[in-house]
Length: 233
Image (cartoon, rainbow, N blue to C red; front, side, top):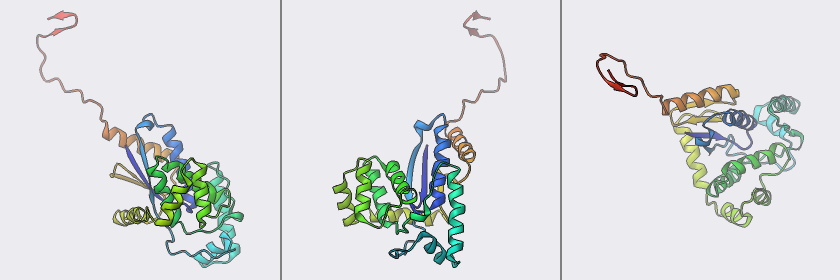
């Protein structure tokens, strides 16, 4: 079964949704047969980081509210994240443009470590206050999960995977993605948002059953003499 997930590295609900989906997948009987692919989606592709600006101030500017209200919104989000075991550290979070980070996810995918790359970037941003705008930070994170840091740097500097990021974003437009996280199962069913794990479990089961239907027992219309394990009639 194929599951494609559009998300942004700096989307707080995307990390929460990742945890909720992972819980459902971990309890799914056929989890070994599920292929998960992370798709790029930038919430603010034209975002230009302001050195020294807090995530509270950045959010406030985006929403057109006071910085105090931005902090309140982040505090509320932190409580939601804590419910799935994530301790968001918004006071140290550094606002970032995620174009390079998404390219690194694609680099990781080509090395067989896409999920590990996605997880490392999200943790670095939300839990550790790492600066994802910096090439050095990104290459160090790549090395931390066993990727070739020099090769990662070369790919990011050359924009090797830039078109793959743009392709994902174009696909999102084509299928009508309005927000993330956005989950697509077997190109047939979609789930939008960080839904409860029970919802993901239900969808996984439904899609699996449709792709692997149980044998249908035919209706017996006539019964006559026949042979069986115990002999013949």
